[in-house]
Structure formats: structure tokens, C-alpha cells
Image 1: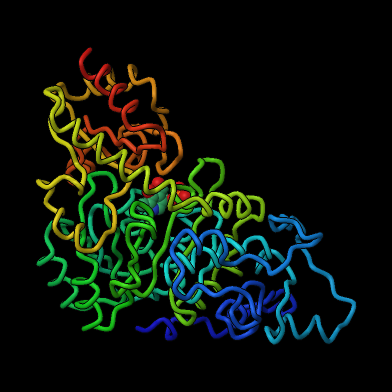
Image 2 (image 1 turned 90 degrees about the vertical axis):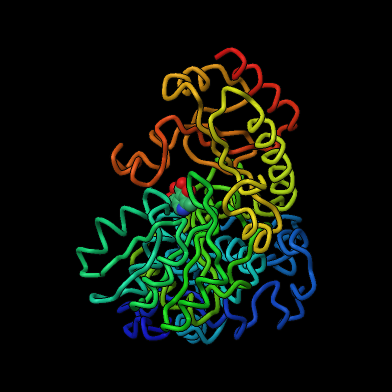
Length: 432
Ligand code: PLP
């Protein structure tokens, strides 16, 4: 199946509700910040330059430095011909915010530029990005090949919801590339990867698996939430689509939820069409916050890469720590692949404790510089056991089967000073 095969031929019954569609986002119709209308282009720009300048209007109303937040749900027209042309996608413009919205579009264009994609489309949450992508591209009878260690919510789509639509899902051992390749060889319409994985930071060789997937004509989708486009760009490694929980590093401040998928315009188009009608659109206010966060993505991620490495090295030497899971450590099984396909090893690590679940409970209570909460990728360090956060949807047996110890701590470093994080961890570990 190719992305275009899955494209929904039936457009909305209410054609008037189409905003400026794929054609504009794909650059066929000029828009603010497009090279085609004299706006800045991304060619040759570094990631921070893209994050700051991509997707911005040439000039905001009143010359405002920051583009205004468009909370308006509808966009009016005095001229019926213009209205029709925008609805038909022949002219740039917006009609109704479920379809497109200027503030959401700024965020989408930034992500597209960061991932090296032609186009991106945004969603209300990361799970909306995951589920809309899967439901837009798959049909009854299709076969998905993925791995056991995907995010807990994604895993539930694979095990609970897709089978109801008679989509066959094969979940392979994440550490066994030969098994994944052989499952792909048996036939696949879509190969879904996540790397590094949540929460044990396993690393999948994206280029190797994407190449194999191409041999059987499968679409390759990669969840790049943990890595961010600063550390890893799956489209350059052969993926067709890259998606994110923007709630995490892209936004970076734990104050807005969102999701986004990016890729070639033809690959994103059917997902955009599905999202328009399914209605899981990103709210403009959240888009404003996510775009603001995205402008500092590289600065934050560089600090988080350094902090995570410092913390992982420290933990590996502490006697109370049983194991450290971080692809930046040379003894991590995915280290060599991570070195090849990533520019940095990311801001999330995990560790288990010698004292088991009770030691983990005591440790969490004693950390002062970590918010005990779900989620990751924030400016503040977030800590939590997968058993109550990312993998709460799974039973203890299912977590054990996925190789997630009940004493595991997921530690998502913020942008604090690394020495302070180490001192905080040292004090808590020494007191166990
Ligand atoms: N993908 C990954 C890797 C995640 O960690 C998460 C959430 O933790 C999601 C997707 C879902 O994102 P959201 O919580 O924004 O729906």
C-alpha cells in the first residue's frame, strides 16, 4: 500500500469548510514564510534558525515581533468567489479552524522544517497523531509490523483497537532485528517504529528496517518523540512519516498538549483529510505555546543531552543502582546504532534499583529536583515509574513480558544544571 492508495477520495460533504489545504502547505500555493512568495527558505539553515524563522508570517499585523494568536474559529469573506476559491484550495486562506488555522499552521511549518519534511499536520494530542495516522492509512485486512516496546497507548491501539477492524498486528521483540525483518518479509502494509523506546531506551536501526520495509512496499512510520528532530531525523533514514507527541520535547514546558505528523506532502495528505473530519485538531492556543517552545528546541535538547549523559554516568557508578538504561552509555546494547543514527542520545533515561519496588518508592520521595509526574521532555526534570505513568495501561504481567521491571524509574532530565541533578540523586541514593 502506498500513502496515496490510502487517500480518502471522498472529501468532506461540507466543502465550504476546507481551509487552505495540502496544496498550500505543500508549497504549491504561496503562504507566509514560503520561499515561493519571497519569504525565508530553510535550505542550508541550522535547526535553531529553522525553529525560530520557519513558518512565521513575513510581517505580522502592526509589525508585532510574535505572530498573533488566532483564536477565531471562523474566517470571513466579503467576496463569494474568494470564499469558494479558498474552500477549493485554489487560494491561500482559512475558513474554519477544525480544518486549518493560521497559528496551528505556524507550528506545523516549524516541525516540517525541523524534520526536513515537505508538510506536517498537527493534532490535539500525541495519541491523536498516532491513532489518526494508523486509522487514516490502514484498511481491514492490512498487516502492521511493530515492536512490543512502543508507548503504552500505542500498544493498546495495536492490541485492542486495530484487531477490531480486522487489521493484523505483529508485535516483535524490540531487541531482535532479525525477528522484525522476518515479520516484515512475511508481508506488511505498515511498519511502525519508535526509537529510543519508552521506557527502557531500546534502539531500533531505522535505516535497516526501513529498507526492508520498502522491499515489501510498506509505509514506514517512526515515533520520534524521545529523540526529537535535533537528535534524529527518521525521514533522512528512510521513513515515510515521522510523528511526535508535541506535549513532550517539542513544546518542552509541560503546559500544552499536541501531536504532529510530518513527511512528504502526498504521505501527509490522507492523514490531514482524516483529521479534518475526525476532528482531532490542535487548538490554536496550544499551538501558540507549542510554537513558542519549539523555537528553543535545540538549546533545550543540547542541555538535556548533556544532563542525561552526566546523570547516566553517575548512576552507573552508584552501588544502589542495579542497571542504567541510556543509549549514550557504551555498554548499552543499542549504543553503536544510536551513535550512527543520532546526533545526541536524548534527555530520557531509566534505571532500576537493587532494593526493588520499595527502594524505588523511597527514592522518589527523597528527590528534591524532580517533579514526580507522568510525561517527559519538560524544562523541569520529571520522574516516575512506568508502572504508574507510561505503561499504566498494561497489567503487571504485560509489563514484565515487555521487560519493564516494577522497580524501574524513568528519569527525564530538564534544563537544570547537571551538577545539581547529580547532587540531588546522590543524596537520595546514599540515604536508601
Ligand atoms: N508517543 C510517545 C513515545 C509518548 O511517550 C507519548 C506519551 O507519553 C505519546 C506518544 C502520546 O502522547 P500524548 O500524551 O501527547 O497523547
